[in-house]
Structures are given as structure tokens and as C-alpha cells.
Length: 362
Length: 63
Picture 1 (cartoon, rainbow over the protein chains, first blue to last red):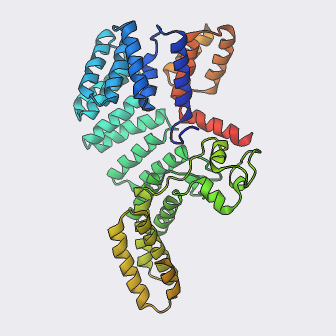
Picture 2 (cartoon, one colour):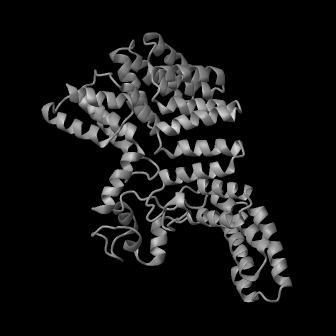
Picture 3 (cartoon, chains in turn brown, green):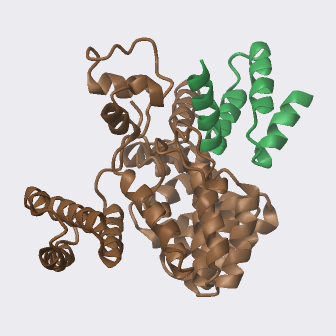
């Protein structure tokens, strides 16, 4: 089964390239794309093998130099990688992939001016490559020139609208420029682009299907933006959504007791007979919940505070529940404890709250 | 030849679309062992990334 966060197309592309290499081991065309795929998939051993094969075939091909450079980049030996990318560029000045990758390496080394120069060359060669535009945006972000980076991120998103990473970058950039409304819009686009199994969700029109799997980091960022706009209700809604991402569609469906209702499941599934892993496999790599992460815990703490500030019976109970969860999960323990004491203090002062509930929770 | 040009140009402009995949399939019938066509297919998957996934997921959900 494929890992959920990995796009299966990388896998297919890798397999196809691997077949090509088997049938035709001396073919070096587009080898840089193969090495890029291996780089993204974290297959260092295979990357080393490719670099070796390419070097033994022809060490004076730019593709070879790029594969070797990628290998060094994977091993975080950025200077060596740059040497090989330079070599590739000596062999072919108009080799766009090499310029872009060299830009990435300079960015890793925090040499932003060199990185900008490389990306500009890459763009001069091919203006349709969103990676170079995105890299330029990142470089200017490091230089804290956010208006510049916004411009480049906009170009990148225009070239690659289905990529949520671009929208997130744009949202972060707009955050820095204090344009909260626009940032929220960008984040929502990121959610719309990256969400899996979104069901009836239309994020842009603020209707979210509770069964959809969203990225909790983005929903948390949206909550932060709404907080800046002093829209407490929206903050609470997005925080609830963030926390809901801990449980995947599978858990939520199991809770509801009907798996097929929330997902168009297959015929082979018979309730009570299939094992859990088999169900997951049948669902074709549906992302399970993210589990407890630092972000969802932060969201929990924040929501607990909001509920505490509201200060009425059910709100306090909910706040207590959330802090309890935090203590069990082991995140933000100190703050959760402090908040818990405050909540319990207030609950003790108010006789309207049934104490049995509190005892049951603690 | 026009087909090959069409595929190559789409690849250069990062246009990973179904029409390219169809063109590739029809060329595959003529040149079943061509490494060039295989490479182009792999590149198509590489550039398509999540967009293709969503199409497949959609197909899966509706089938």
C-alpha cells in the first residue's frame, strides 16, 4: 500500500524509469528527472546506484553530473553538489534543471543572492517552470522582501494551481504582509487543492463536510488569521476542524458505525469480516487521521482557552475535556495543567456545574 | 511525427493532460518498445503529480 502523503504518480514514474534503465542501461536521456524522483522519494541507495551507472556510462554528460549532484544534495553535502551542478552547466549552459537545482543548493547554504541569480537564469531559459518561480519566492522570503516573494509565489501558483504547497507559501507570505483576508483565501485554496475525500466540501464557500481529510496545519493557520480579524466564532469552527483531523475518515466512519455511508466503498467489504488493514487497502490509500500532532495539540489548548473565557457550564466542561486530552497525549502539558487548575477552580466556585461530571473526567 | 512533437511540446510546457496520455497510448501501438515514449510517460506521471491522483481517485469513487 502506498503511503498516503506520497503521490502515487511518483511511484509510477519511478517504476517506468526503472524499467527503461533495465531495458536500456546506456540511455542517459532525462536521467535527471529520474534522480529528482528518487530524491523526492528518499531512495538514497537507488540514487547512488543511478549516479554510479551514469558515471560509468559517460561522465561528461550534463545528466550524469546532475544525478551525481542530486546524490550529494541528498547526503547534505551541498558544496559538492554545487560543484557537480556547475560542471553540468559548463557542459550545457542552457540546462534549466541544473540552474534550478543549483538555486536550491545555494538556498540551503543561505547564499540567497547566488540562489536568486540561478533561479533567474532558469526562468530566462524556461518561463513555464514553477519550481524556479517558487524558489525565487523562497529566496526573497529569506531576505524578508515579502512583496517580492508574493509576486513570485503568485507566478508559481498561476503555473501550478493544483499544488497546495504553492498556495500555502502564498498564504504565509500574505500573513507576513498582514493581509489576513487574502491569506485566508489562499489557505482555503490550499485546502481545496490538497484535501482528500472532500465529499460535499466546498471550502471556498465555507461549507465543510466533516468527513473530509484536511491538513491540520493549514486549518490552524486559518484559525490564526481569523483571530487577527477578531472573528471568534470562525476561530472556534476552524479549531474544531483542526482537532477533528486527528481522526481519519476511517475512525470517524467506524464511530458512525457505517463505513459505506461516508465513503463510496467497495463490494468486498463485509462489516465485521474484513480486517482493518484490509479495509484501508481496499479504500485505495485513503489517508487515516494525522494522529496527535503538535499543531492539533496547540489547537486544543487554544480552544480550551476560548471555552474557558466563555465561562459557562458546558463550555467549561468542554475546556476540561480538552485539557484532559492534552495531558493524556503529553503535549503542552505544563500549560494544560495550569489551565486545568483554573478551570477546576472556577467550576468549584460555581455550584451549577454537576461535580460528578468533573470527577469522571479527571 | 506530429504526435511526437505534440507530446514533446506539452512536456516542455509542463502540460500534463489526458490528451497527452492518449497520444502516448496511440503511439505506443506503433512503437511498442520505444524508450523515448516510455520516458515521456514517466515524465508525464512525474509532472502530473496530484492532479492525476485526483482524477484516478474520482474514477475509483464513481466506479
